[in-house]
Amino acid sequence: MTMRFHQRRFFAYLSGAPNLHTLSFVSSQSYTLVTTDRCVSLLSYGDAGYSLYKMEVDALRTGKADVVASAVIERPATHQSRIAVAYAVGDALFLQILAPHHEPLGKEDGAEASGCGKFELEAAPTCMFSVRAVGSNGGVFYGVMVCCTDSMMAFGYIESRKDISTTDSTAVCARLDNDQFAAFFPELATFTHTILAVNIFTSPEKDQGWIAFGCADGLVCVLHGSMQQGCLGGPFKMKDLQLNGPVTSVALFPKQKKTTKESTSIWCCNLLVTCAIGQAVVYEDLYSTSNEDQTSEVLVDSDTFDSIFAGITADIDLDGEVELLLGTDSQVMLAYKEGAGDDSSHAEDATTNSHVDESSSASPTSLDSSHNIWNELETISVAGEEVHPSATESSLARRRKWQRLARSQWDLETFGAIYSLLWRDINHDGVPELLIASSTGIYVYEADPVFVIDKLEHVLAALHTSSTTAQ
Image 1 (cartoon, helix red, strand yellow):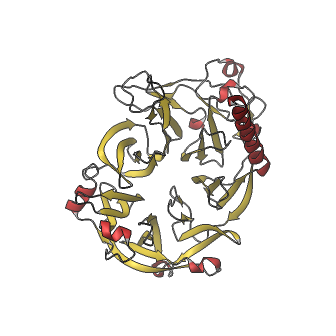
Image 2: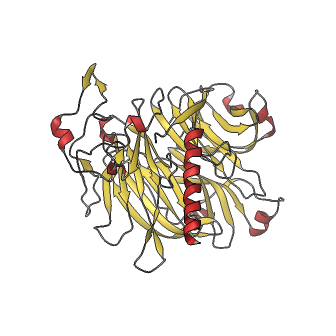
Image 3: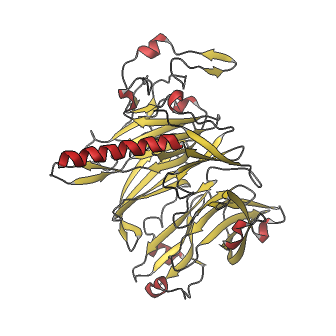
């Protein structure tokens, strides 16, 4: 069945232009953070449907300030979260901590915010993300990590165990000094690479997690640790990878794999990485002790484009297994499914294999490309001409593990370069929506109800058959 999505809303940017971090996931809140170079907005869903409201920040009212980055300080459930906004006024750089007031979200005049602290920055952030960490004395730090060219800083609240369980917190927002930073984040205290992309994944059991950093020099660093008081902490197992170009996005998708022992399984860390030079690579089972289990694959046709700006994992066909989505600089979104090559009507033959030097963690390279991102019956215009796949290309029998879904199976279209992607349930109907930040605006896509109902009926039928057989 064709996976169909319907565009429910389109929002032109309230002010400014998008970037690679325009869409930001907020796990503890009912809104999504939308950041441009001129403003920070909240995308939410309510009685009136989808709404996008610009945060009214005093420093941004004059139009002379440029927003650099933003992130949410996700505090305990008993405390209100904060939004951190980094902006520049001339040569001066600041970080403003704001408390959004949710009451005005139903109005058209924007979402108000009150200040909770302002800090001067020495360098412009390249990336910001939410963090939580447990200290040696049992206190928990709730804040944002501010990544700069060769250093990292953390701003937020250190909450005691007593403060976490009550609404009367005495903690104030502050920057961690060097000793505090090393105590909460020892593995990051000496990290000097310029971080451009971050992704964090926690296991459903909430007992372990992974964090991946993508850097400007092509380095990808993955850390695997355990959960303590709801926070991902060390000691970490680290894995470094090297690509040929700045990393634009990283997306973790660990999977459970059965072991030789009966009824037991372990988590295998898998990772999608996209590059500014126009390449997307999948790494599987990063922490395997066997080199044979460690595999990498350049996604077919990802190197056809000048740049891949965004890459995420999303179960777009609702079968319980994630697909990979790529946003390009050429108004094209690519979707890949694992094992889709088993059905030739659902995927295309791969034309190449990928190669990697395991000893040096060198970047995988594609020996060739189909130079045609559609199937044999489709064409793509190149310099005003129509290009068809050659007989030699179509006759190559070797097939990749990840197959690109043909246009007939993936009907979604957008306009403009695709800078940022997000897959999450923002309307609380149980089915995630696909959010796309392109150069033209924010698109909100919902899965086709007929497709969702059909999937549900198949699941219910399978459960009924299983229960009948068991009896």
